[in-house]
Image: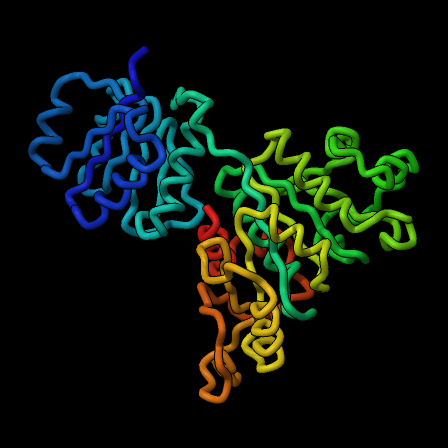
Length: 352
């Protein structure tokens, strides 16, 4: 069986190399990849009939006659983003100057059926833990936002709110709780295959999520370790690309186990001295925070406010990987709104 043929054509060498490397990194010898940077060569090539599974072409090289060729998916890299512009048949417009990861994910997401890549190369489900050293820093906002953003980038996501007392449902369209007594009985038994037993209650809005419980775990007689059991069994099911766990703020043995099973850990802090102090304490109690497993994000950032992160009076024991700006209309935000925020998007790309 022949390999899928992918052609990337752009005279901008500085842009085309990172995109080429992304394809090589993900598919290596599974595709036939052709890179064209010479305009004359490109024009001469398409004087004769061509077949390609994917053609990615810059705006300055594009000609409508390309659609006459046997090209399954044609991507036009636009120099300027034009909101609301609709795509023609078999022509997908992408804004060239977003991140390479976002461009790549859009291309792959729209070409899944064309890339007959062996399932054995598919990456296993990644568990992403979102945690914080103190409450009120917007941890749940970040967790819901990256769940929505990852889904928008063609990833299958399961969001699990691992709060002892949950309130995340206010951000969802359907805020009703799990009502089945049978489900709570199964959760209390902590079966190793608990995900398959309760899978029927999983809901889907932008992303899939475990609905809120009707009361606090303690009131229901369910141990906190149930979240670890759900995450591990859901990962083993291979139903998802990412499982995002929104952890409880308390740092205890159960949360330490969630840290252990996670592939990436996003630690959310704020720029206040209280939040930085608490995050420093958290780091003192965790091994390996200097590895690439840990991502530190400053949420609710306001450049006009005091920033303890750069204060000479505070010894910072971690490095901020990215910032998410303050939301002026926070109480009115939906998960859809969060997915469009640049800071949330950049945080999501840190785990891809």
